[in-house]
Length: 126
Image 1: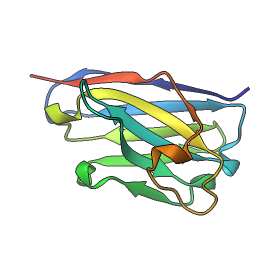
Image 2: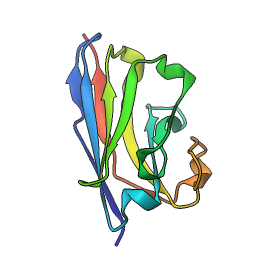
Image 3: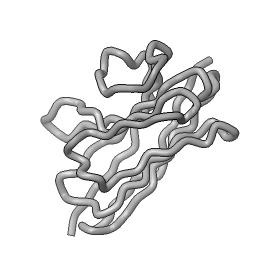
C-alpha cells in the first residue's frame, strides 16, 4: 500500500531554516517522481519542487528563488526539502505527493500526482 508521511515542519523565525522529510512506503523511488506542494490559508495549492525517478533531476518553482533544495535517498526511500532563508510568505501546509506518470524529469502540475501525504505545517513568524 502506497503511503507518504511528511515530517519536519514547525515554527521558525524569518531567515531560519527547516528540513522537511517525506517517507515513501509501497513504491521505490526508482519508479516514481516526488513533488513538494504547499497550501497557505485561503490560497490554492501550489507546487514548490519536484525530483524525478531515481533522483536524477529536479525542478523548482520560481517563487522559491534558490532558497530550497530537494534531494532523495533511494536507499531509505526518503525525499527531503531543505528550506533556507525562510520568509513569512512561506507559511503553509507542505505536502509531498507521488507520480507514477512522470517518467522523464518532473513538473509541478498537480494533476500528474496521484497520492498525497497528510501534510506538515510550516510557520514563519517573528
